[in-house]
Length: 435
Length: 176
Image (cartoon, rainbow over all chains, first blue to last red; front, side, top):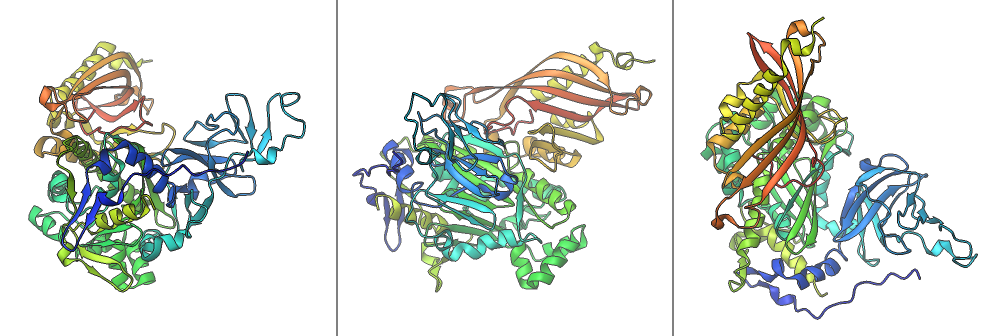
């Protein structure tokens, strides 16, 4: 009655869909367009990897909940009477209805609206409507609680869940990418971040992997976001700083954009990093946020201070990106439909003025009416349209292979416009699919 | 005691809103900038009860951000507006209320209106790529706080509350 059975494997040959040799890296178009492959991803990728559910600050008090998804599976994250966080499937054990329909809120218990079964904040079945006579008097309610997701780990406030009971720990999964997630959190003087309520949500008619690849893509900016860089050249960063760019010459901005790097990690994680321009820290110090820059320098030293002010986009395979003060959650809906939620977070311990400035800068580039992210989303629909020409089989992801190096931790490093993170993503994709 | 409509009649308020809608629908964005006060705010909230720094907004534009928005729309080319949006505003249910200072002598009133905004990108068969060619409808309640400056009514706050503000919205880059 309480069994938990993984979805059966298919015989799909996914290994040939990502091709790699010494100088070539290609991904087959069907990886983005085939329903069968999408269904296999729900099992082999979202059913095996650590998936971001939310941040602790989103369920601050007992009774708070937030609904989310592991691939297509609806889940609820709740905080019980003892302060413990739970993640269980949003599925009544009786006839399968969701027990929680709001995105977030606060309740004393969860009640299924179909036949009225009642569950506690920790998922335990508390009551079966009209129990007497309908079911045995000694019905074992302890076996009929909302099914918990097999594994949950909380890393510095970030709640991750895994469908695979035998999965390696989250920290092991993150591997050499862990220090980079830490940088995003260490920017907060109190060492933790706090999600600002409300999310920017967008949806596109394209495959979920386009947004995953794009989150660490340093190659598209000069074309897709040219309009934004012209705007920065015209107006500067008074209304919000976006990475390292300063007012002035568009060519200087483009030249600076070539100075970063990309990284690819073993489990599919990736990074695009763009350094702060040499004068940006001093400009910040001359402005109203000198106290923050001084704090960073005092705590981490001058060189690390510069690194911590860099723009750094981290993709945690497969569907969470941490960038520009946001948790970006990619939710696959079907092979050609994806929802993206962007949750801005404050740096706890930083001044209200600095957090407001960060928020203003975030909203300048991200969100449905902003000057950046809607252009990416538009492209993903172009991709899906183009891929309907199925006879043109491959997408090419070989950029920068010749100049890619590996460090002693096995991290691959290349230049800022190289497709190193995307290759890492697809290597992990291939390793998981059908494994 | 003066009533709000004594200093701005409902027909005059309607004319103000119609003119703003015309400026947007016909793409006269530079002129649209001029109908705001220096400290004017253009706000599309997501949560009605939260301060704009405690909750994300769809749009929270001060003067500089509005100028940036208009610059991007009129001086640059970008994917989310290639092809550009065309809009048609329908405005109804106009009411004139008191301003926030509650002092009509200072010349401040609030106009509430219902607005329906039709938006379409791509109008030919060639534009029927994914994401184009859909006519979208945005419905919302607008609040315009107006202040009279040298005899001219200007917007000190435009707050547009969209019905679908909590749902995924792929593209709101057309000024609304």
